[in-house]
Image (cartoon, rainbow, N blue to C red):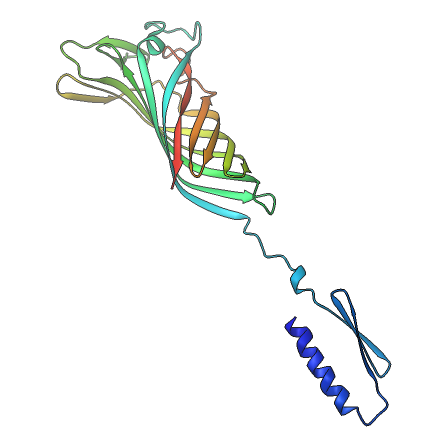
Length: 254
């Protein structure tokens, strides 16, 4: 509009300058356009400024999302050739997960940001606590075996740590945010520990070094629930009694 006003001022000045001639200045409005005729020359002015749409920032970053969940092992029948108790991990443990997503990137596919692609960095700690005074050890061949702990045991558990990447797609419906993703995690630690009463901790092997998961989450205003399923068994085949892990819990972002 400023440009049109400026041009009109110039035209008015020009019409005065040409007042001594037979030039005629004619104004005619056609919707958002202004048509001007000066001495037989036609000029059309259009205000396109209001048709300009603001740019939408399609790439956004988010920091720090925390998840806390309960882990369940789904038993596979006749899993490998294992010398230990057949069902001890599913019948004798209860597990939990603490996860952190320190960084994620979202790329919107539309102007309303209702559909987007995402990628994120994740870290996890999975713990499985034994219900009875026992622990896991490796034999000379690297197989996992159970071992009873004598005396009073306060707690006994195995703990695994992972770092991973995820990629997926999200949908925003008003305040509801739905995310479906695929994860690839790398094992960073695997230890057994117990207190009797002194704390004892040592490394154990036999876990799959890479695991793949599929998951989904639903959040409102940064708080919600998640569920994911590990496509990769917890232990390597033939090394330990095993199942795939299902994790269900809550998550919240800052």
